[in-house]
Image 1 (spheres, rainbow, N blue to C red):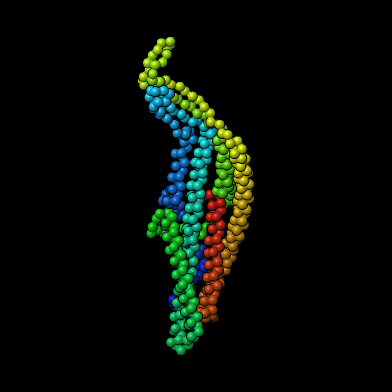
Image 2 (tube, rainbow, N blue to C red):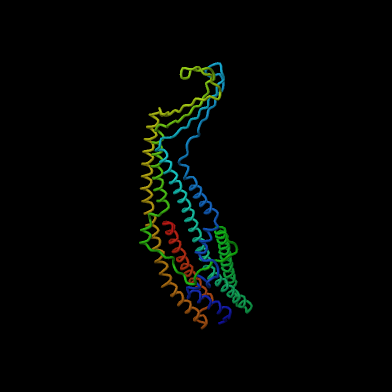
Length: 419
């Protein structure tokens, strides 16, 4: 049987592919950015995250404004106010809210700072999840390109064999058309994967603020670590749960603020006036001018008269608090359910990964060795060998898929606890 040396080299490459985990998930360890390096760069360069940090600083700067008072009112009057002479009167008043309003505002400012911190943490968690996802996508795509590239080479050699047979008068037109169709499909799949990799690199570079880089990952695929006990202990750090707890605190403070706003305000006043004309002072007539001043202080209270409106607002705030409590209970259930679903998915993908890594891939290796041996001995033809190769490639891609899906489960669980 005619055997091309190029064909034998292609078969050897396939055997190396299915027989080595290092080639299954990386041709070699690339010199580039690791996932930890990318995460650090994202924290430093991503504009959305930096904007969230600015929001935190803004909330910090506003914390001291809880003592803010209403604007002071100053009134100046000049003219015939109480007689034929022109008098000058200066009045100043200042409203001071009920003291409890300052305590409520202080709590509001502290919670606003907490909300800004939480928003920044959410941006950070989403950014980390996206960076890790894109990293794994690129790693997965590059791993899939390995068997596709080899299959492309194998079909090129197969076409050489068919064309050689045709020149010898043993050609099969249908076999040639089928080989060309499969070769074209493989080429299109390869082109599609290369475009996906390019897009993933572009998006990852945009997120971390770096251009023209490559990622670096270990030769052997090692699933991301997951400690289920640790996850259970840290479920309270779930972003949605923390946000709901903070929302409950905010509603309590809002209720205290509403109650404080229904309390009376104090009004402090000061008046300074002239009294031009003749006045009796200590039994002695005396002429007073514009420079002779008289002053007085006043203390008043602004009492809200809308009692029914105030009661309605307080009652509404009570119901709003109940709403937040129910929302918190529901989110607790949702977070727990989401963890159960992700844990079940993780365990399933872990079983798939272990099956392919320990059973399917070694079986494929033996199958390919036997097929190569039979082909070289002439016990089978190249077309039958390609069928074995295609089956092996499918199993290899399933293995790669199990690796990728397993790490995607872990990344989603990391995001669940804001890791």
